[in-house]
Amino acid sequence: MNEHMNSVELKKAFRLINHGPTVLLSARHGGIDNVMAVAWCCGLDIDPPKLTLVVDKVAQTRSLIEASGVFVVQVPTVAQLALTRDVGTRTLYDEPDKLQKSGVSIFEVPGQDLPFVEGRSAWLACRLVSEPHTQDTYDLFIAEVIAAWADDRVFRDGHWHFETAGPEWRSLHHVAGGHFYAIGEAL
Amino acid sequence: MNEHMNSVELKKAFRLINHGPTVLLSARHGGIDNVMAVAWCCGLDIDPPKLTLVVDKVAQTRSLIEASGVFVVQVPTVAQLALTRDVGTRTLYDEPDKLQKSGVSIFEVPGQDLPFVEGRSAWLACRLVSEPHTQDTYDLFIAEVIAAWADDRVFRDGHWHFETAGPEWRSLHHVAGGHFYAIGEAL
Image (tube, rainbow over the protein chains, first blue to last red):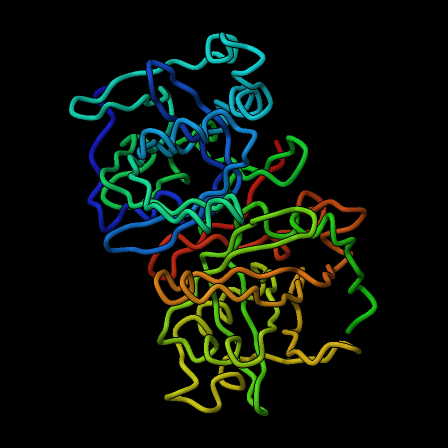
């Protein structure tokens, strides 16, 4: 944790992902940490906050979240574009040192046995809501957000401040094939 | 339909919503058309293309899609910001002339008994996949995309062209309380 990582009220946590960014999903089980990029992550409820995410059966991170029932969704920034592409294409099955190779630094948050990825703009600690049919049929996971934090240089007082935070803080929005747009201007 | 509305290959249809825009949901049943804004719409599968969307029980459009089993998801642009805010806050229950008041123009597409909203950048005709438990418990709907179109001034050859299309064509990304960001620069 760094001095800029501040708690976000749970009833405002949905704002961290409401604008549709690509996210990083991280999980831990049995001494293994993994991180992957997920383009399909979406709000589901505001209070208590819930979200959905789609995680393919081939993803090693999926077995971790199914085993532990908890995970972190974090919002990467333009400054982490290469890392985001990298963890979205490498697999821990083939490369046990995937995280080091991709330049991912993990940090701990007191009270949470979860791998948090350094340098993001926001973090949502989530608990899986078990829905076996939805998970098996559609690769669709439902989770409740149990705690949230954001970097106060880009999100504070319940609002994103992309306009004033510098272009490297903008969120990433994946279209296809590693091609991303940054979030743009406030309207 | 206008001369710029072109079919999009189904296997590329997910690209129309992959970057996380707020969408407009429109549906028709029993002679009634309605349109609402939905911030929580997300890809679910590529081929065949599927998506999820969250529609509250109070939304009149929900009863239309449950009755007809079909609907349109369309991607509004910066030029339609006021309309998008408007259909997201007005309700047909209180204002039977909601669509006229909000400035919504409906057009027909041959072979589709669905209300298409004029002036969007993309349209996805969808068929509901019945999942009563998911719908009732989470207000979460799963649908298969059965046809897709885009305006070739901003999406063509399977790619968005926000960079060259002019700022009024950018997609809208809702944060909270009617506050939106436009999509930004290609990375």
